[in-house]
Image (cartoon, rainbow, N blue to C red; front, side, top):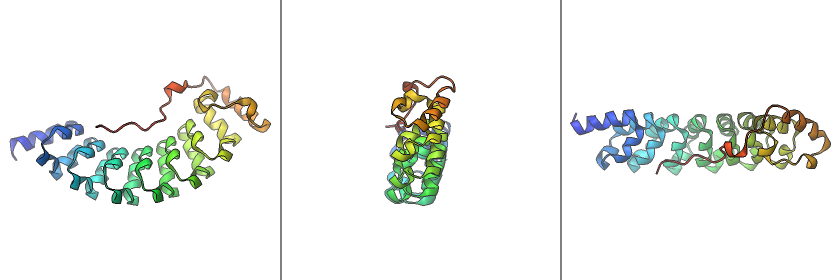
Length: 209
């Protein structure tokens, strides 16, 4: 094995992002790219284009970090196994799935269990599905903000959400709630201090450039 290639393998094994600084011919090397994405899935962004379309490589990448799904082809974003693997690793990878899979109940539920805020990328129908929304809220209280209007007013869901992030983060006006909801809100608001809105990450973390 040439010294340069051996050194490259060692670098990407220690830090997948090192793939970014390698010469093009090494970013076309299957073994080097596989080693890099196993270390850090988002290193897929720096692989040669044909390897970003390689199903084996992409599966390894999204298993390491689901957000690597954004760096692959449209065809693989429609691949149910690839997407399901991605959202299990990082729920917000649902953002990069095709529309059909954003409406797939099993895929979406796996996503919101991993990261509740993935609910924002689910189909309108699933954002109105109580079981899906419950899973999302249990993962992250602010997920309730992306549910249907009817479910945003559901006493049980309100209580679960506020118990996690507090009334302030949800922007709820207690006086505007129906009387049957006020009791649930009051109970939830007594569960310790609310999280400050600034401490809650609601956006998908950026991929490396």
